[in-house]
Length: 211
Image (cartoon, rainbow, N blue to C red; front, side, top):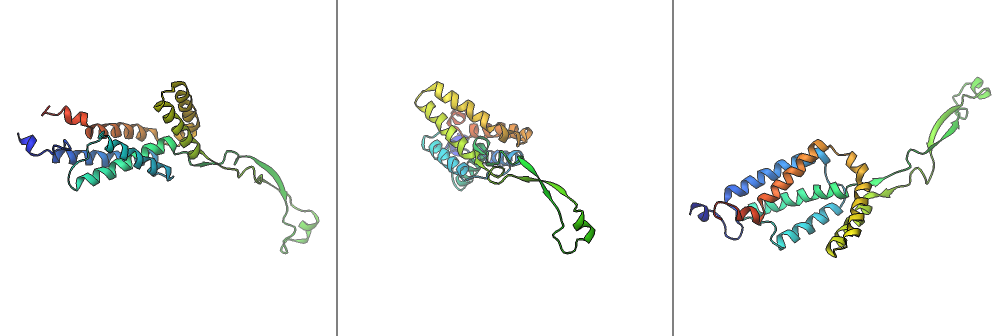
């Protein structure tokens, strides 16, 4: 009876449950920041917000009660931002920035150069980028987003070969991005995220002591 008295029927949370989820979410966010840093593209919070709306709309996450409800929403939103950074966090890449050509230069045009150096110039070799080639860039995040949407569309329409192909391409495109993350922290972040969402799920509430 005590549990029923302190638990909202619409949320399945007790006050202690909500505090525990908030604490777990805060720790998870700290670990995620250590592993990946902050989101760097507006696509990530956009998809995080859409995902959160869908999950709450279909009651896949319990909303919580009181002022703590909005703290949980903010924590969940931030966790999804980092999860989407893991999937579409490639940013802008310059694949040919390593491509440079040797360039010869001298300092004989300077007025303070001694006369003997003007007669026998001191040549210097410098590696310089090729204009419009070395500085060419590509937005990896947009490519990852297109592949992610294609994978989701294939899954929704149950076109498994297409969804599997786009998922594999997404992983291959994301390999350079994955290499930039600290995976010791990322693995802990993924585990913490899973536990965090499980604690907020109706399945957890249904399997509690009142079930």
